[in-house]
Image (cartoon, rainbow, N blue to C red; front, side, top):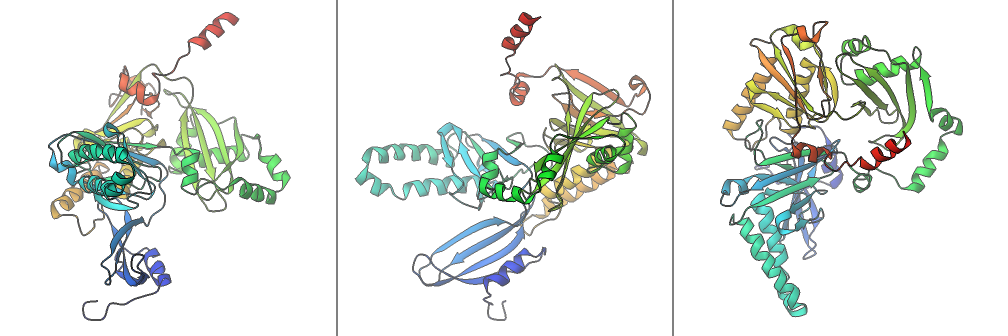
Length: 490
């Protein structure tokens, strides 16, 4: 491009080029209309990778006639399986906090609870900035029309002036506040300078989207479309799938086997089935979370020795190929949490069965690695499979593939960490795996017939803190009415 005239291509070529899975995508330019002066300007597109995040499409418009400029960030990947919520506590006077990179997708909302302030998804749409940059831009946009407000509504203008003083004080670090970034699509991000170690000032939560959030992201179809699609399906098909029960020994065993095997090898599924085979598998109709087509979900219960009953659910979509499996605990909520510690000393320990619930956190002290509860979701795997999934998750979310903006020190740090993570699987030195589950729904299988004889495996029960109960929603549970009704009938 430096030697030749910069090429202006059509929109179709740009879309085709940036849609290709090519990490070395060049810079493309499209001639486009300036909405300010009506002349033609140039929009530049670049597909790039943000370190510790994922691929994004950057677009920047510039008009040579009037000087109008703007930019936007769009995500080249898919919508994530769950939404994300980042909460960053910013103390007063800490300027380093304001330099953290922030990626705000077009579906994300930013909140500052101390000011009762919210930046909706349509504002600062698809922006790549810093904490300071977002606050300054919000203050500038609020101040832009103050002269007109003072003429039309002086009282409102005065209130906004008072609020701007507080907002700019936060942007300059004069007062502490909490910066909350909530994205139902899961495509937003706040930089963690200590990654892969946890950041004491940054709290990350992943959550299941509500039906309203699914609709805003375009997942759900309207009732008329859903009715048209249901007319295509024969009535025999509908009646045969509702409350359908298939006996063990025919399709039931194969469906249950696939439900576990979707996230594990066939050997692990066999290992679980040696404990208890399902008597029957229930099949019921559902909707694919990826393409909204009709699909089937299969569910069965099984019991694991030294553990409890678990519910395995598996969904497969024949239309788009999407597959999903979940493992949920059965029975009542335990009174105490459980901390499981495994000392990995040899290769055989890597083959131990592991059940990690969606409320369990993972710790490996030798690497200073800690995954918060909810990371990776609920999975059935082995010790080796768990380490592999951690590596894949860090590679997808934080990125072992580096962009141009990553400095050499961070690049070396990540390469060393990945080498240490892979070294765990060779068991050159013993290491420790800790599963901390506030609901006691996780499990690591012993290698002996009696769990007490396995000296490498320890189970420790503990009282949950008030904060843990609050996060799990247990502080609001009131069963006094149900207990009174039960006692009166008995």
